[in-house]
Image (cartoon, rainbow, N blue to C red):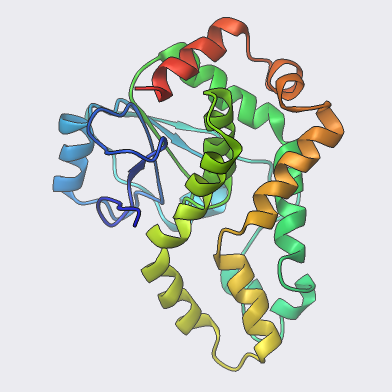
Amino acid sequence: MTSAYGGFRLRAIDGGPLEGSLLFRSASLAHITEDEAAYLVGDLGVRSIYDLRNQWEVASSPEPRIMGVKTLAFEPSTDRGRSDASRRLVAGVIGEYGAPEERMIRNYRRYAREFPLMGTVLRTMAAERRAALVHCEHGKDRTGVLCAVLQRIAGFSEDDVMAGYLATNEVNAAATTREMSQLEQGMTDEERAVLRSFLEARPTYLRAFFDEIDGRAGGFPAYVRDALRLTPVQVANLRELLNR
């Protein structure tokens, strides 16, 4: 069973204990407590927070300023228009997004094409070389692919990368149950299946991400070198951060 700390579901990117790790992942810090913040900074030594949320998520769930830590905002592309979960994940609307998993697979393929954002985050992390936390809203999709890329760079096996990605379902289980119960009212069985596909991490999603990389970049090493624009020194720095 994967364990996570605090209401923001903090865990080490390498899947091990929090103590001794330098790179962490979580959901939004909007409701972090003073004690949780003190543990993050004082006990774990986190000095940088990489926030992958878009401008609307940031506006609707602002995060408190945490003393001793700097937040770096890396907003994903917003040229597709506002993504309003409260509007699209409702009965009578969610069916417009296709069969279960269809929309999410498209999203993950798009993540593989947003390499300028991914590359900027990883180059910054490699340059800073200090304990850091990366998060989006739920810590599942954008954070999930970034952490998967980090693990691949660090030499983790494909099975371990997938296990780390799917562990999000255990960490988010209570939150997913609450969200399902809030949103599924009035839905058909088919709509509920689509809803659950939005809320869960699934193997088909991460495979779609890496398949897109293989097809467009010519494999993971080429993606790291040419799309993410990571130098051998930067790759070495990331490996050092992740391999305790």
